[in-house]
Length: 279
Image (tube, rainbow, N blue to C red; front, side, top):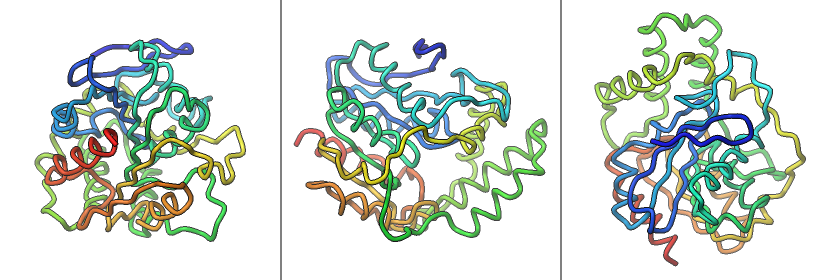
């Protein structure tokens, strides 16, 4: 574990693998700490010869956290935190793997800092600044679930665990049975690593400072898109839109996968990503 100080915030990070190997920074989605990148997946990537760095976003885990509703930063600040991490690890350039909002941030980085980003791998992501016909988004079941946030008692550990467990269950595809025991254990780890679990939902209040309309089409680094065929938050049409708009981008659709990183897919996804980086 390493704490990186950048722009008056501290970001908790963790590295896997050998520093001499090509660096791959993992950017998770909204409300998620580094633990949403499973240890086994990080190890699988490192076994492919990559120096893997995961981190806690602001307002998650052990990174700088403010009270619920007190966030004064923008989406772009979450992206710039990654540059602070590269600086903290003394990395001139790195490959970037982003999931969900993390994929959105990764696209910002490739546009704003093309000299620091070697390639993009985007999992369950949407195009930055989409300007075409409306794309399908979050399922009605998820919208109904998130409506319960208003009444969630954040000091009731059992209630918070049940809420997060339902989020994981709704995110899962049909490719393998939902492992409630493993998910409960991961949620317990998440809650143990933060003094303010409610602050993770500060991410839902963030705005962008700039007009990014159509900008994803200007990305010039190599792009790989992996997308769950059953993604209920950002359906696969979003991944297809990224590939259609970026010359040379490649799409891999994962059957039976939702908005998740299921254990049965870890080694396969790590191999696909490492092959992309090598080419």
